[in-house]
Amino acid sequence: MQKILVTGGAGFIGSHVVRLLVNKYPQYHIYNLDKLTYAGNLENLRDVEHAPNYTFLKGDIVDTNFINQLFSQHQFDAVIHLAAESHVDRSIVSPMDFIYTNIIGTVNLLNAAKTTWLGNMAGKLFYHVSTDEVYGSLGDEGFFYETTAYDPRSPYSSSKASSDHLVSAYHHTYGLPIVMTNCSNNYGSYQFPEKLIPLAINNIKNKKAVPIYGDGKYTRDWLWVEDHAAAIDLVFHTGKVGQTYNIGGHNEWKNIDLINLLCSIMDKKLNRREGESAELITYVKDRAGHDRRYAIDATKIKNELNWQPSIQFEEGLERTVDWYLANDEWLQHVTSGQYQQYYDQQYGVK
Ligand code: NAD
Ligand code: TYD
Picture (cartoon, helix red, strand yellow):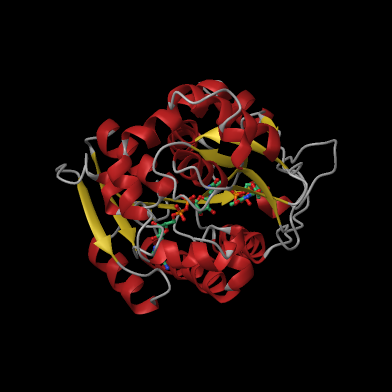
């Protein structure tokens, strides 16, 4: 039985990846290593927590001794590394958390994998999950390609860029079998409501102001999280060792247009007057160093591995709204405690 370590499996994307692997591959044992920071939530994995091929391990990837012991105990065959501090606004307030987890944590995993696999790298794989934000910010035209030079501009994207370079360095220097993907903005179920879409859904539902940074014309390329998880499964099994693949939805939206669409979906779902939710839109102070536009060219993964997104954005957004409205208990649990303190700090409102 293959032993696969997934890091950050209690987070948004990680929980979708764990669920997919546990259900699809009974011949694998999936170990989910997560520190359970504010973003890690085991309620995301309730449906698989008793599966015989699943084990949860609580721990910090920054803790070198713990990571070394874990690898020596379990002798993992592969790593799918998603654990990270992931929110740009938090990285502006507390950059060191990002440096420790995203850089030091990644190097700890690389070292442990290198030591464990030394002398027998065949069939082993270190899969590093990264972001399109490492490429920097685009103007009105153009796309990010796998060959685009890195130009990260926030503490978050810089820490992810550092980790990408280190993963690449361990491949070139030590022959560690790696593969890497850089994906655009994800949306869907189980996303912590500090990111734009779930934050807006929660606020619209509660008739609270929906904060739009700056002029609202910042552009993101949105991908359904289950399409990202499917791409990770595909790259894990068929990606070429040493390669990077960009993953994206060819689905660019200016923030204000996206929020207007969301408001109109929610007016219908909540039986509100057309235009009622849009009245909650409130322009607020811009994010420092806000990247203007991200857009992925996903031709390589489409041509080489035959991957493409499975659903249209409008359908995915409606499914996402349905999920948040049907999972009020989940939302209540994550919007209590620490999240509320952070929310007040960020927006200065209750
Ligand atoms: P998330 O913040 O929802 O989850 C991160 C998980 O990592 C949490 O469960 C958290 O508890 C865990 N974690 C954090 N620090 C840890 C540590 N020191 N040790 C062990 N576990 C720790 O993040 P996400 O949105 O699911 O993103 C997952 C990965 O995908 C990240 O590497 C991120 O950079 C990348 N990514 C995210 C997006 C997106 O739109 N969300 C897009 C592209 C790439
Ligand atoms: P976010 O979901 O934080 O993802 P990222 O910054 O990693 O792309 O933000 C998506 C976009 O929405 C980004 O341009 C910032 C903007 N935004 C707002 O306008 N208001 C908000 O309250 C948040 C959280 C984000």
